[in-house]
Image (tube, rainbow, N blue to C red):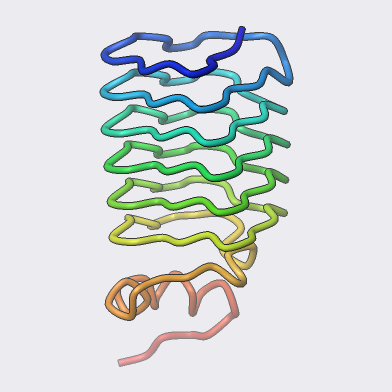
Length: 150
C-alpha cells in the first residue's frame, strides 16, 4: 500500500485503489501507468514521476511535498483541495485537470499544457516562465472574467 525507498519502472497500476491515505516516500517512478488510480488523501513526499501516465488520477485532499512530475500525461487529474509544497510540473499535459481549492507553496509549472484547467485561480503564487504565462493568457483572462476581443 506504500512505496518507500524504491525505483519503479514500467509498472501498470491503472485503476488501482490502494489504501486511502497511503504514504509514498523517497521513490522514483518511470514510465508507469496509473490511469484512473485513486490516490485520494495520499501523502507523497520526495517522489519523482518521469514520463508517467497519471490521467484521470484522483489526488483529492492529497498532500504532496518535494514532488516532481516530468513529462507526464495528467489530463483530467483531480487535485481538488490537495496541498502542494515544493512541487514541480515540467512538460506535463494538465488538460482539463482540477486544481480547485488547491493550496500551493513554492510550486512551479514549466512548459505545461493547462487548457481547460478548472480552478485556475488556485494557481495563485505559482511560478511560471514568462513564455508559459503568455501561452496560457487566454485561460488566465477567462478565470478573471476578461473578455478577449480582436
